[in-house]
Length: 116
Image (tube, rainbow, N blue to C red; front, side, top):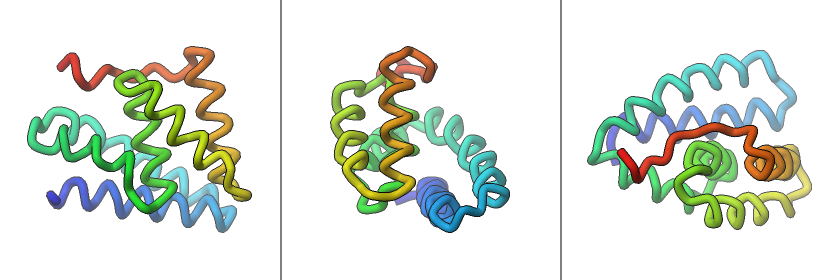
């Protein structure tokens, strides 16, 4: 996998760790870094396809970040993934619940990665 995707994965994992620890200050700093990587990944056709595979990553935080980003591309798959995470008794479960609700209400506006 590329250095860029590895950085994304590492940041998503760190974000999840900060969220679980209740450290929103550092989680917010990580959020900005994650968001700055997404367009770079999206615009790189080689990484583009590899990014889709992150929906199956072992780490819940990586799956959540990727699912939200791909919510307009693989809506049904994303909802299924988030529903699995929703079952967890943690902040990630609550994040999944909120993400599903916002996707269903059209509150999350993401590009369709397959139309690029």
